[in-house]
Amino acid sequence: MNSDELQEFLDSIDSLVIVEGESDERALIALGVDPDSIVVLNKGQSLAETVEAISEARTAAILTDMDGEGKRLRKKLHRLFQLYGMREEVRPRELYARLRISHVEGLRKSDKV
Image 1 (cartoon, rainbow, N blue to C red):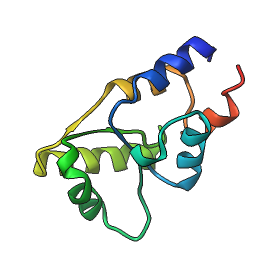
Image 2 (image 1 turned 30 degrees about the horizontal axis):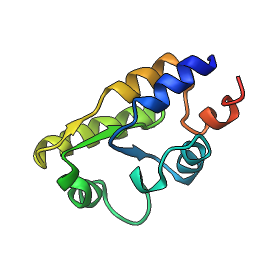
Image 3 (image 1 turned 180 degrees about the vertical axis):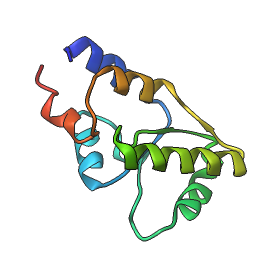
């Protein structure tokens, strides 16, 4: 990953961003993402409750990890988005995938490229 790719990824984040855990949140904040735009899963709410709580935003990026569990979560979130009239902002995830990092918290480890 080079700094231009990382910057393009960061510039693509212009909506809410859903991440799996607090380490993912810390990694994005360390890179300059506004903490108020980050939604962390696994904080005592079900996925449906989380999506309902953010549904007024209408769009959000889903930045779950690229492992099996992250892909399953993204699929569930995508279905819930449809139920709540939301759409996924896919550009950040596409760029994240291009960075070849499997876990969001890995962005922080790679930000000095």
